[in-house]
Length: 296
Ligand SMILES: [Zn+2]
Image (cartoon, rainbow, N blue to C red; front, side, top):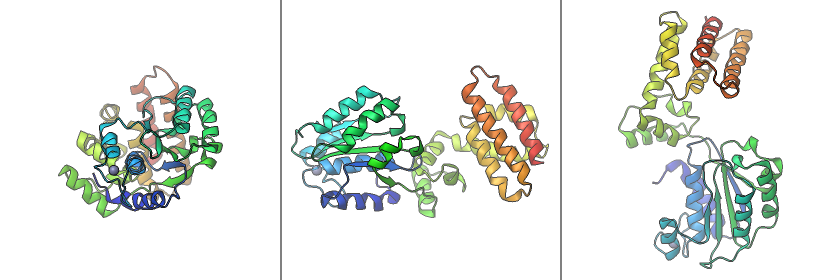
């Protein structure tokens, strides 16, 4: 899959790799669903390729075939799920110090870098300072503020920027052959792959429906109980509410209410995470009443 918004960064990285100027530890940042994992995978394949082009791997050498089959001995891919502990980082460090089996580079891909435990992050520092020759570590995260400053300072950061332009909108239409709500990319923080997932799962239609009902509820033209039920059924209750409120900000002149609204929403977020067995319907009812009061 060629994704136009990733091409400039892929070309830049490819040129650095070809000239032997690539930093040994790269941290790809940017919103979830913008394509960080694709950039990392593309670069990993190019670094391992025997006869790479400037912007991509050749696609047919032995190394490329091994990568495609998921069996390249010089590529270590850490899991994207769950936390990353000290053992995983030790394995990674040993791997990076080892000798390449195919005679090229050694590459470690670490998605969700913010899921490293503090001990794991500390264990990684040594490897970041003394990487093996021709070893590359490709980290990814959408939450760089959660990484230790010592990790951040030892990595070269590459922001994969959010995209909300017409081309990305057009790409979504081509992929899904569905109408794409004009706000969807912005709702997804400029991450087209996340927008695609919402469209394909039908979730975007639900979100669209909720966003049309919320103003009616605020005006008193849609029953509270129904609104609670509709919101409860959403996978992204909190994200939808934040988005809804944010869209109203330019029309609000009362700063005081604005502040209270966001305070109320963050309280809801905290309760969702911290209160085990919270009666969600009751909590949501209280939240909606407060939001309605503050917005009217
Ligand atoms: Zn190749």
